[in-house]
Amino acid sequence: MTPYETVIGLETHVQLATASKAFCGDRNAFGAEPNTNISPVSLGYPGTLPFLNERQVEFAVKLGLALGCQINRRSTFDRKNYSYADLPKGYQITQDEHPICIGGALPLRLSSAEEPSRNIQLHHIHMEEDAGKSIHAEGETGSRVDLNRAGTPLLEIVTEPDLRSAEEVDAFMSGMRQLVRWLGISDGNMEEGSLRCDVNVSVRPHGQSNYGTRCEIKNMNSMRFARRAIAYETERQVALLQAGQSVVQQTRQFDPETGTTAALRTKEDAHDYRYFPDPDLPPVVLTEAFIEQLRSEIGTLPWEAYDRLIALGLDADDAALISEDRTRYETFLRYAEASPAVPELAKLWVNRVLPLTQDAEPGLEPGGFHALQALIAEGRVSAANAASRLLPDLLERPGDPEARASELGLIQNTDTDFLTGIAREVVAANPQQVTAYRKGKKGLIGFFMGEVMKKSQGAAEPKETQALLRTLLEDNG
Image (cartoon, rainbow, N blue to C red; front, side, top):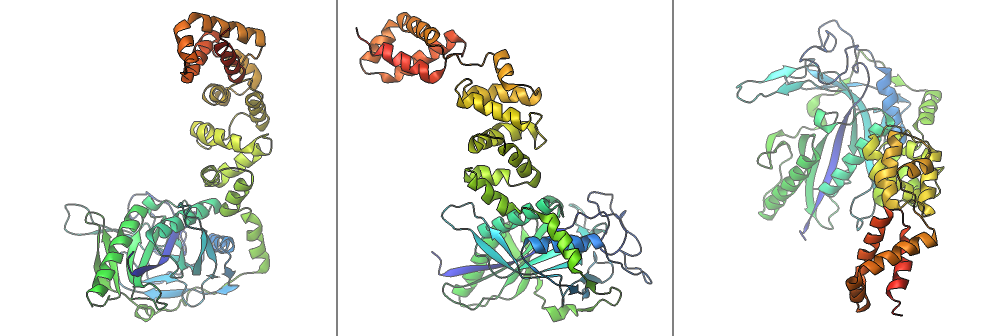
């Protein structure tokens, strides 16, 4: 084990799914032709004034309530000043002194069973606008700028330096993506830049309470790249310290081709951005009624949904998959309320229903699933036939499960005379296998079962059939 501990803090940026941009009426949409969703306001032309997008405020409060933040009843906007080609105004409208949400935490559920779940503490959440996008096309010497993204409403979620590994970062970002989708405030698509993070990495000797010097890796929009960047940056900083050198506070970028990070610039501090209150935007003042209305719209949260499914008897993998999406969870819960065996329903749901319906509402009503499960529990249809043949047919052509099972020839026959007759025929037709069985090759019971199923066209009830076969095969009289 390395004598150093990795310490990580995240600045997660969530693009919000509002119809218009943060401080003007420009269309907020991904994939438009470059420089078409722009206007004099988003371009910062002289004489233009910004105005607040109320939906951005609603989404910020919803996220803050879901994460247990303190909601500031009075928050303000500031200007963050820096010069870059994709920032047309020369400053970014953000919140510095008085952000909308303070504190809070995201419950972290790690995939490894050996590591317990825990809460990742947040410092704050603030509202701001996005910058444009610089395009560096292969084979071109210069760069082009697309300002469609300039002014897109963002929430920045700033954690405490509370994460300790790339795996925890992965789990945090996955949990945040699930939450913003669950709340309906963002599509959370990392590949489109709707969810991305800046990763602040430092190292310190195990047991030391003081933090080391941090370096920020900008704009990670792929968790695979983030894991590689954190691993490299940790090794780089440890190597510097072990060589007796110091870590310099920097902003760095990750190169996916080499798997390395490289310095972009010396890391700025807050005073470098010359923050000051935005003179064109008044404070955001929230009423208790406004906050309580949004609280009432949140409902069950993803981790609460997971816990409820576990309480219903689902295993961890099924509970995680079903609670991944709000509509999926709520649909399953409605069917579970009518189910005689919820864990078994979950297996059908995960293995058969979701792949066939792609999260669309199943045509078969909850009562139909209840009847299907009853057929399995009573041994009238085998679980294998129910899953592979009967359920797919019912999802395509909803109807009565018992009638459809009869139509498909899937009803298992439990009539003793019928089963005994077929079993006797199979035993009589295979004397060599009977002799081998009686000499100790008990695994041949599978051969005899297969022969019975062939003769009965799959209608023989397995448990009773196997018991009959064992009785006949072990009778040497």
